[in-house]
Length: 449
Ligand code: B12
Image (tube, rainbow, N blue to C red; front, side, top):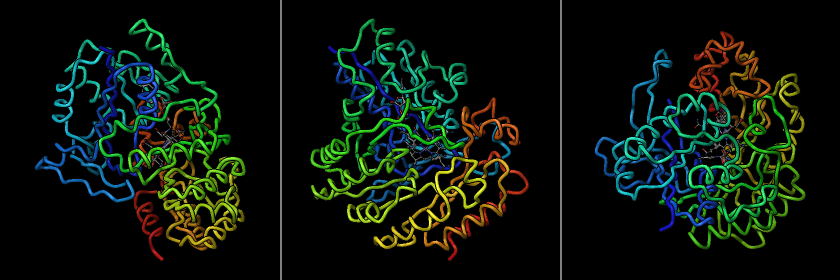
C-alpha cells in the first residue's frame, strides 16, 4: 500500500473570525503535489462548516452560510490565554469540536507522516492544540508544521508548537527535504518553481462541500508596502498564464459544479494588460456561469474604464481595494501605491460600469503606529464622498516588515515575544489618540450615511 500522509487545517482561536472565503489553499496545493508523487492523502479540516457531526452538536448553532461561499463558522467559547485576560471579549474556538477531531483521527488508518498548516501568527494556540491532540492519537508519527505562523515566527514555532519539524516558506520547495528526511525517498515529480502553471491544481476534491474555491493567479507582490509581509512569505512575484487560470476555473465549475471563486492574489490587477484583462475577456468569451470575489485588497491604480466594465460584466461581485488612508504624507510613507485623485477616478470608472456605492469596498487601515482617530475619520469621510464604502482593516503588526520596529516601540504589548499580540482586534499599536471608544465610533461612521 502507498504511504499515507495526513494533512490538517487547524482551528482558529480568536475573539472574532468570519469565513470570508477562507480555505487552506497552500496546504491543498501541497496535497496535490504529494498525491502526484504517489502518496495517499487524508485530510481533516478543523474549520469545516459543513461537518455533519458539528451540525448534530446540541450546544452549537449550525453556522449560517451564504450562497456565495462565505458565512459563519461554528464556534464554542473557550478560556482566553492568560496574556489576553484583560480583554473584555469572548474568545472562541472556530470549527469542529475536539471530540469530533479525535474521532476523525481515530477512524483513519495510521498515517506515515502528518502535515499541519497555519495562518495568522496570532492563531498559533489553535495550531498547538491541534498538534497536541494529534500527538495524543499518533505519538510516533512525524509531524511537520508550515504556513504563515512558521514563516513569520519561526523561533516561536520551533520552541512552542510541538511539531517534529517546522518548515518556513513555500512548502513545494521543501518537499524533497521532507520526504528524504522521513521516508528516505525523493519525489518523482516536482513543478518548475519559476512557473506556477506547472503546479498541479490544489486538491479541492478533498474538501467536503466546496461551496467556493480560491484561485491564485500570481504569488507575491512587486510592491513593498511597509505594513505588508507578502514578500516575506513568497519568493518573488510570479504570474500565471491568464488562459490557464480560466482553464482552472472552468475545471472546478464543470467537474464539481463550483460557482463561486475567491481570488487570493496580492496583486491580481498588476500588469493588467497582460494578465487581468485577457483573463476577464476569456471568462466572458467562454461564458463561465460563476461569480467572483476579491476579499484581499485590489490595487486601485490599475482600475480603468475597460477593467471596470470587464469586472462588472464577468460578475466580480465582491470587490475590495487597498486604499489604506487619505492622508497624503502617510500614503507616501507606506508605499505610495495610490493618490487621492487616482482613487476618485477609479471609483468613477467603477460606478460608471454599474457598481453601486455599497459594492465598492475600500479598506482603510486603522491603528498604524502614530495614527490618530482624526486621520481615520477623514479617510472614511473621503471614501464616502467619492462614492465608495469604507471598510476598516485593523492593523496587524508583522515581524520582518518595514513597520515592525516602529510597531514594537510604540505598542503597549510585548509584540516581540508574544505573537498573540499581533491580533488586529487588540489594535496593538493604538495610543490615546485612538482608543477603543473612538474605534467603535469610527466603525459606526463607516455604516452611517
Ligand atoms: C488570502 C489572504 C487572506 C484571506 C483568507 C485566506 C485564508 N486562507 O485564510 C482573507 C482576505 C480573509 C484574509 C484576511 C486577513 N488577513 Co490575510 N492574507 C491572505 C494572503 C494574501 C494569501 C494567503 C494564501 O492563501 N496564499 C497562497 C498559498 C498558496 O500560500 P500559503 O498559504 O502561504 O501556503 C504556502 C506556505 O505557507 C507553505 N505551507 C502552508 N502550509 C504548510 C504546511 C506544511 C507542513 C508545509 C511544509 C508548508 C506549508 O506552503 C504553501 C504553498 O507554497 C496572505 C499574504 C500572502 N501573500 O501569503 C495574507 C496574510 C496572511 N494576511 C494577513 C492579514 C494581516 C490579514 C488580516 C488581519 C487583514 C486585516 N487587517 O483585516 C485579515 C485577518 C482575518 C481574520 N481575522 O479572520 C497577513 C498576516 C498577518 C499575521 N499576523 O499573521 C498576511 C501575510 C498579509 C500581510 N498583510 O502581510 N487574508
